[in-house]
Length: 248
Image 1 (spheres, rainbow, N blue to C red):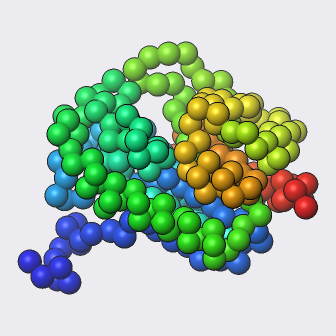
Image 2 (image 1 turned 30 degrees about the vertical axis):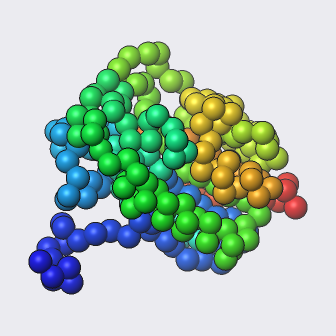
């Protein structure tokens, strides 16, 4: 089939969605923006599972795009489901091409071409981020994620409305946490995950270059509709502005 004339559902997506903007020194990232599975990859799971958190970070893409518009920031977003390849993992990580996720087996990944997926999705996505860092020279990198109120496979309810994740560099994290808590929001400090254990994208593209950064985890039931996205856009725009002021 002529690739120019193939149906849209079979057309290849670029490895990264890129949004331009002057930014004011901020670069936005969203690793788990998409639940897209290319037509030539079979995961062996029910399509409905892709609409759950295991397929992507619910609400994160809409929040990233809205925030990029609000603060006029450039952004880089992933365009493939984390069940195909997790863009927020190092290439050697066991869960890069996940054999299972939150209690669901992913049979199509058992004999997946791991190297092929790295070359096709992971490498060009991170190359796009590297280029954005060179082009925009951000003073702050903010990664947008979302988390579930509770894992489907069990565990306690997660009380946080939002969490700020960071590794060794806490220059941006501490003022961000203070700003969110100052608004009365239940804010996790390296919760519901620890950035000291899971921070692959920011480790590579921010901390390694000495750029302050934070990963913002918003509980996904709070950004599941337009009103929620608008509310959190306003909140995070103010928080990012506060952080930028304190970093100067």
